[in-house]
Length: 415
Image (cartoon, rainbow, N blue to C red; front, side):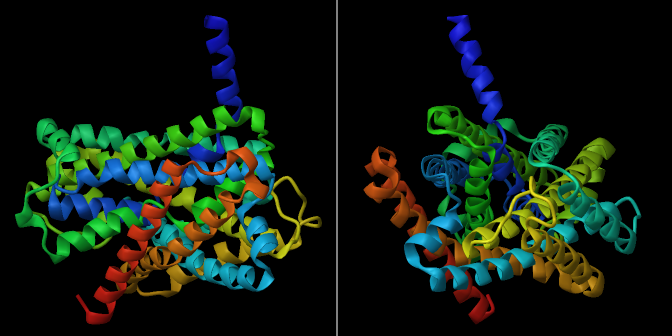
């Protein structure tokens, strides 16, 4: 019995990485801002969204992982082969635009977190931009993945920040499994609920996960362990999101602090109520999340575009072997860092919010293309979607389309 479990554990550790990393990096600067705002403005009343969000995230991420294992191809590769170069090119352009705004948001998080320790953005942003560029340019897949796994574990800091905030545990757990009273369902609350859902499942995640599965060489016989990697990553990342909401609800909301302007404000504002240790943990968590995502997002974009256009990509290849891959990666980092340095601080929050809106606009297109691919018997064979998975995935895409329409309506009408 122990021997069988030991083999399973060893196999899981061997494939651990793509699913865990991809899920956790979504708790980036924009995600932390959204979760912090949810807790600061509405207390525990948005915690009920965490359970359905986790289910949807598991389904979408598992679909990508399964397609990568069965086909041995990245998502953009499959889209090009099955839907043609024209659709692929348009999708790649949209993804580059959306991911550029996301990269800018990560450097906003870096600047904001280190500003709490009196470090100017003109020092923090260039140094961190060089670090994330050198990490991938000078590393290989195995060493890069190990660094990313360690960075994922640093998110535990938010669990401790939540504990030190001394929340009402009974109320927070009750709010997780029950819907709030009708009195809180106003326009602002619904908009924030949309934001919480929209920041959790981003388009780039699907492309990056499938590419990582392919590059790691995970085979069909190892898929059970790879699926577990995805499930563990999704659960872990949403537990972290739950604690971020709880930490801000127990401090900022309880003491009437209300809305925050940037995620870094949450750390500064909770210091008088939760102490210096919670402040340091929250600020350190924000820096780690932003630096982590600033590495992954450009990498994901470079993978996706190069695969979609049929050119060489991968961190295990040299600059000479994959020049387009490394140039695109470098340009996204340089452009994101320069944007943060050139924009006035008053505009940075608007850019961060815009990145989340653009994610929501693009996501339904990606999910629908995924569903069309994964339900093809000639492509997936016996590994195509089950009826339950289709219901959940189509339901998720319809909900996200509705979220997008609501967000766009709010932007057009100024609400």
